[in-house]
Length: 209
Image 1 (tube, helix red, strand yellow):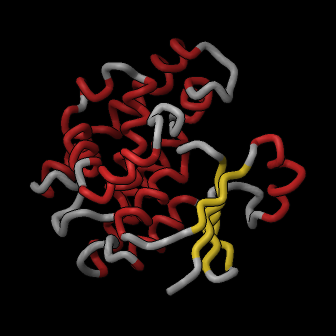
Image 2: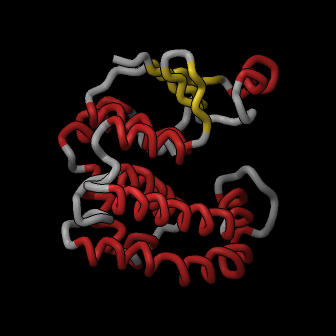
């Protein structure tokens, strides 16, 4: 079995879905939590792109949360039933990345990392982007007919996206009220026995944003 080390800060962020995938698969990994104060001096230069998360696999450093999700999806049989579905997952996640880029200015302010008028950015940046993008994610779940994004069932996209929508629901109090289909998917992922066990052991969910 490969030796895995996951490098990220001591928060949920972009790495929490990766931790969840390991727990779902029952595969051991070293969860390296980096102190924010030590990041610039001790860690940043060690990372391939100067960013985290990074997954080290037998000494090889793999950066980027989406690349890590895709890699582990294949390792853990969560990458789709055939080559076409693999490509469809990649396409949906590429579309998600476009959406994330569109809402970046609002998102960074909402998380407390950027400066600006959060309410103004919500109306001018988030709402127009969400109106275009969220129906497409909801359509995938509806057409799959099983509560997941694809007909073959659970994939790494479900882990990645459900975690993000949970963050949205914390930042936007009525988010899941307006998007019950996304909530259904998030609840279905969280209800998996392996995930339930991890969530109970993990501690304060709000710390893991």
